[in-house]
Length: 178
Image (tube, one colour):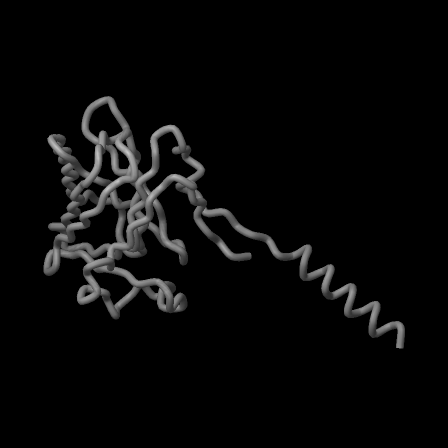
């Protein structure tokens, strides 16, 4: 079974290594080494910040998801700043312990009562880790608020057992016919 996170048609996925190819880490978490296609950016107190600049397709309210790997430590906070036009949001994001081989997703939430960000066009997202504990960042997903649900944080597992049994039975029946 292959785990995979759900996607949303109108969302925007931004790889952290975009415009930061020189920061792609060679020291991945032990299980992420198996996935060669995954390119990660490591943040720790030595190399503590990364900035992503992008834009949304239309003005609106958006939820920001972060995909990361953090297999070694209990939960700790990193800092973020999201600047979108005249709006600036500063806050903390809890990096939870994530022993999953395919990483974890978390929601960046603004301070206060709202759980979305108003983004009109271009935006700049900065994440800073001043802690000695490291985190590996994979990508951001910018999701329209009306398309967000908590299922986007959970891996789906595509079970291929039925297909295997069907193929095996077909092979077995063909062999038995001889």
